[in-house]
Amino acid sequence: MVNRLSKILTSHSFFLFGARGTGKTYWLEQILPKDSTHTINLLDPLEAEKFLLDPSELTKRIEQIKNTHSHVFIDEIQKVPKLLDLVHHFIEKTDLIFALTGSSARKLKRGGANLLAGRAFTYYLYPYSHQELGTDFNLQSALRWGTLPKVLELQSEEEKQLYLRSYVNTYVKEEIAEEQVVRKLDPFRKFLQIASQTSGTIINFSNISKDTGVSIPTVQTYFQILEETLLGTIIPPFHESVRKRQFENPRFYFFDNGVRRALDRTISVDVIPQTSSYGNAFEHFIINEVIKLNAAKNLDFELSYLRTYGDAEIDLIIERPGKKKALIEIKSKTHITEEDLRHLQSLGPDISNSESFCLSCDPNEKRIGSVTCLPWDVGLREIGL
Image (tube, rainbow, N blue to C red; front, top):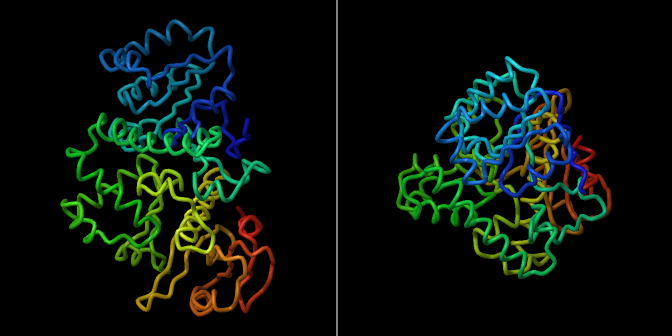
């Protein structure tokens, strides 16, 4: 069993959000008291149908187990959002602790999850981080296949390819089609492939609109859907004035390299060092490690990027409470030189209260000008992750 970094307080009701396949159910089955937890699995179609037709079924279950159980585990609560009203009631009126998982924050928001504000803590679960995997972590595997728990259990390349292709097809079918998030699936399928191919770049809403045949507002909604169904993260542009950030286009990063590569149909192609695809995969990996560790350790770091009109850029800026901003250059190279850091060297002095880092595959720790260059795993710890 992989030990997760997140620490869930099982003495208080909570939401655990995470994309499908990140291991939410398995993890909670390990940490919730086995003999006194009543489980409701809404991924079971018959069970979900029963609660959809009659939400008061939850009341009947609670009346039956309230004196013998301490916890109620409702898996994939977004399948029946109306249950949240009853959960709210029972949190107020009983001593039961509710553990609620969800892979679609979007549907929950529309279903009244705000009623539980302050009454249920919120946690997020992602694919495994390198710190969680420890000595079992393999960078080459993470870049090509990602780190979803099921992928790491599979042995052959064929099995991994089939699983990841099935994963992205299931996402479209279950998260989008069955929940009626979008009216027409064909443009969304096309959007998914384009979004995966341009993941990590500044979003050009106009170009994607032309390529998919839908309006710019619809494209913006599509990206919001990806973020709210926990398939990726939108990274805003940096500016000392938060107000001005809103006038620039963000970047979007899919949450897992294996899923991203399955969506853009390159999952059967190896990731070769010293190629652009390797560099792209490495950047995605580092960004996602920051996102995972930030969430798992409740650090409240804010992430952004910087790109000037002259195309000088800083890959990642981390605003850390009580510390200097961390300006980060991400390089997959095994030997870092001053030329690799010219943008960071030129832009860094203009950002107040900041320090600069380069995270790379170079095994040697060094200082080049104002930039601290570190192996990527050492660098993440140095930054505070």
